[in-house]
Image 1 (cartoon, helix red, strand yellow):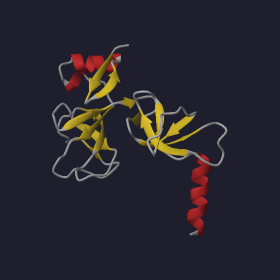
Image 2 (cartoon, rainbow, N blue to C red):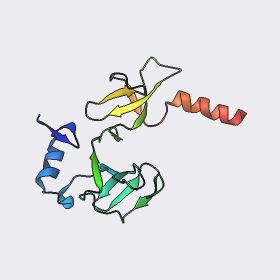
Image 3 (cartoon, rainbow, N blue to C red):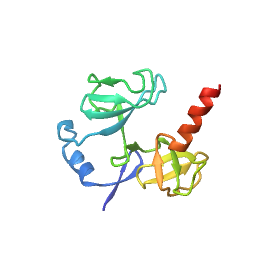
Length: 156
């Protein structure tokens, strides 16, 4: 598989990405979903949007252009210089550098908070430690932690 650089990052040239690049920027030929970061030098804001079409998507992060989880079909087309492509793993539903929880099968009382490396399907620690593999990677805490947090909320 050939590797190219997008925004200075090495990205494996998959068939989907190859089709998108060969489409000459025609967003009607892109395969969705795709993640993009809104480039804003005025607000110094990093809005991330998961696009389902050229102008249609949902806010992944809260920013000055919208609240997290809000759907819109009025975005400026992602094929403009206002948007920066973010590699993502479609199977996991995670994008590059997304904050995540990672744990292994034997872990019953803890997990690692880190950042997802969508290019290599690995996890980086919060402190920038080298990537490592994990049995489970999610943007939500594991069930054993969710149950603990619910109990703690009831006690507070």
